[in-house]
Length: 213
Image 1 (cartoon, rainbow, N blue to C red):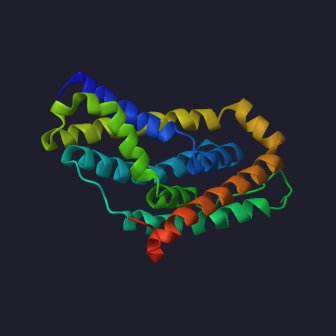
Image 2 (cartoon, rainbow, N blue to C red):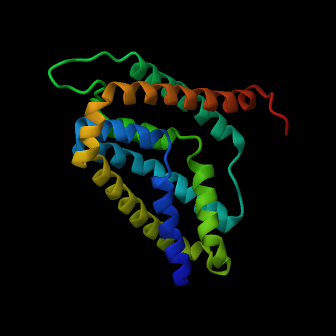
C-alpha cells in the first residue's frame, strides 16, 4: 500500500465530515447551545453513519460496484420527514427562559445516530470524496488493503470530529450563538425544511416508479 493512498483515505474521511450539511448545522446548534459534551455525544452517534457509508464507498471503489437507488430513495424519504420535523420544531420554538437554549436536544447521541445512518447523501458524498482522493493510487486498491484503509478513515473521522467539537465549544462561537440564538435557530429551521423538501423531491419519484431510467 502506498503512502499516497493512506494519506488520501485520511483526507477523504476528514473532508467528508467537515463538509457543511444538515448534520453540521445540527451540531452547531447543539454544541453552541448545550456545550461540548452534548456536541461530542452528537458526533459520536453520527460516527456510526460515517463508518457505514465510508465502508460501502471503499468497497464500491475497490469492487467497482454501486448500491441500487431504492436504498437511497427509501432513506431519503425517512430523512426528509425527520428533517422536516426538526425544522418545524426549530421554526416554532419558543423561549424557555432561565437562560436555557431555545432548542434543547435531550438525547444528542440518538439524534446524531439517526442523522448519520439515515442521511441519503452519505454514500454518494463518501463515494465522491474517497474516489477523488484515492483514485490516484488505483493500482494499490485491493480488498486486502481495505482493513487498513478503514482504520485510517476512522482516524480521519475522529480528527474531524475533534476539530468540530473544538470549534463549537469555543467561547466566541458560543457567545455569538447565544447573542443571536433566535435568528440562528429560525434560519436553521428553514434550512432544515429546505433540505427535507429536497430529500422528498428526489426520493418520491423513485419509490413511486416515476423516475426515468
